[in-house]
Length: 492
Image (cartoon, rainbow, N blue to C red; front, side, top):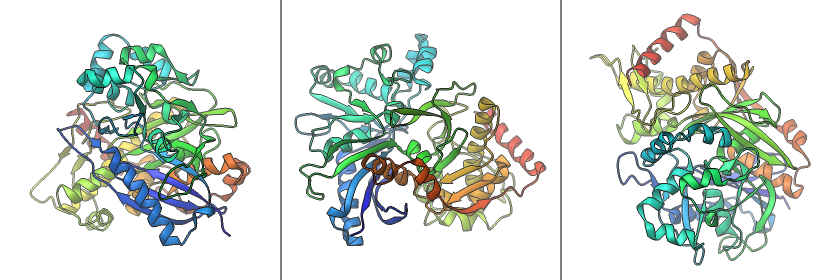
């Protein structure tokens, strides 16, 4: 009987359930989408019940499609959209409000108020993060400021807070286990990077009571077991957790200092392994926990582009220029260049190294001759240009640039985008055979906790490259494109 790890990859627009075998191959996967809700401009919400329903449906469909018996599942690993914040009732598991998604900008005034109090440097030093609506803490502050009833219930201990990992473990264990892994906790603005625990200096300005917070645990450990579910039997260990980007770093086998990856999903995220000590950035990059394994903590530098695949979705759903997201590659290849068109995809603000939460998207350089193909190509360039800025900032912080960039995520399948990326950073870009590295990382963490795999050396030996994109463009092309890009940013 073949044995598997069940990986649950709970993302921003859908949930994917995957079966990972001893050979690190994905033996089946199912994705179930769910809606985002936009009650006001700049606001993004999820209904937690729709998230849970997607987990339920994706898992059921996966087991049915692969004819897999539940007894073949040795453990469950979870990876998740990280900064999305939600509250639920401890008594009956009901959500107390819609989840506020990581993309949501509603807490920008709260962030400005914290900065005006002179707290930015303290938060940066303790958390490795910047004060920005991106992170979970100020989303909680907003909820409590809007509802004194919620705040009282939180202070009385009747509500539980969590990022999505915490919520899923709670539901999977029948409300028995309230935990979050150290990687997810490091994205909240509430955890101290050195002590790896919640800290009052961070909680008090945010007006967040300790009583609602989960226990912070390692990324690879048996946290609890399934209980009371109608789609999985009782007793399956839940044994691995990490936020999606940290899980992707792990799934790309970036176990050594200086190894880096970029995940192209709804947003795009670069992480580089910096070892067992947090390193501050001069360029607004984040210092975050990558994972905690066997009592050792690994840190990473991170740069985030809030909009990547979401820009392609906008071309599809908002403008109707393409019928499917994959169709952007063929459309963009109809022209040799953008004919001067630049797309700045700041649809929900700009992240590092610019950190402009008020920024909005721009398309410049339009002429009477501009076509849908030019806009499609400019969209791909805009994604790659954001990553270029992050790669350069990271290289300056570390004093050297990684020799190669590993890539994954849905948009990593776009050969044109990957070639653009290699040309812009002037470094090879390596795509693995398994691009579902986010889920793979969660499965690897869970498998290590139960002895499914012995160690990271065994896992690194199994990582395989599918294709390497080497730089082909010249310096003149790169210089010209970067000049137009910087001019667009300067107009914000």
